[in-house]
Image 1 (cartoon, chains in turn purple, green):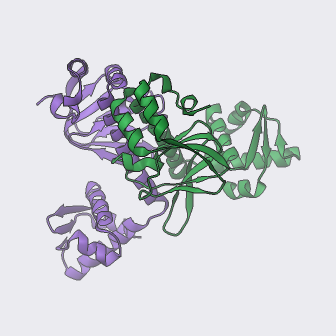
Image 2 (image 1 turned 60 degrees about the horizontal axis):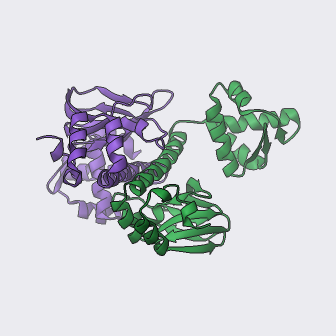
Image 3 (image 1 turned 90 degrees about the horizontal axis):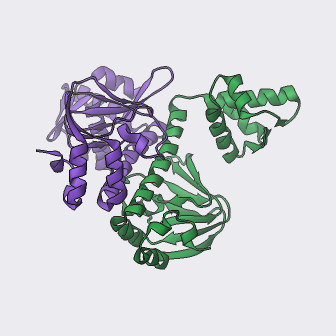
Length: 218
Length: 218
């Protein structure tokens, strides 16, 4: 399967634009632990993820890292081509967390096609809005919410009560316990899973890192 | 002057799209202190600011507010029409900080034109990227940097040394004093000015709120 299967708006592009993007794309196997993009000076192009996992994070002056979001199969990374949008004035680092297969599209071509193609421009806007939403969610967590701490505490308590690391409980029931919405619980559990603190299965949650959950709960 | 003077890509729009946007726009005088938008349930439309000042902020469960950015003359507010982009999944509040003159464009029309017009879609992307950049800057400040505290301390000390609230000092010289880049100082001073802590003039900085600066420096 080629690039066409990974860009949902492919069929809305003109034949000319499809050819331009295909010619500007190179396919790469990138091993786990590779820094693909590091700050604004570095403008390698738009990444389309065929398989694997990428992490986007910011780094403080003292080297402290904060994960912004993850990119999985079919996700597209624009910030590795931040130079094509003058309004992007911040720096993120992007690394592969798993062995990954990606297409790298030259930013000049992507930009040229985006300028003339309403479907690609609209799709790019949606991608940007998605990342923006993820960052806003994180911001909210950092600024206000201690829901992560409350959920970690709840899971540890339940685990002690059940005498097991595997809890047979639905997100709905957790939400009822905590006086919040199911969506909020699902989102946070997914975040916990990405951070390897729990593993989710149908109708159940398994605690996989007590130390990290305990740290969070404090 | 009409809407055409406030949308920089106006001339790139088709006659049909120009008419559609004009017909969907209503002009409003909005007094200071009006909440124009409050969370995602509220989707009033795209705002184009002719004059005045709007503030965008998030509110915690306990009512704590954090300012994300400000919108001034010629700025455009998309989040008051967040419902038109399904990828926007966060909630902000937008209020007028000064008496403001705004155009309100119905989100259905804006969305329809954006879907077919590459110039409007690209421009909307740039707007989104700008706001994203402002939020990322704020995030960086909150997570890592205590530069705001350091700059507040520096200004208060200089003011005591000079025996005056007005400091005749360039951003370049402050940057040298603090071991950073001029751009970083300029950006933070502008932020201080927006927060009414200082007033900037050619070659000078006037401290206008000692209490707030002192609070920040601690």
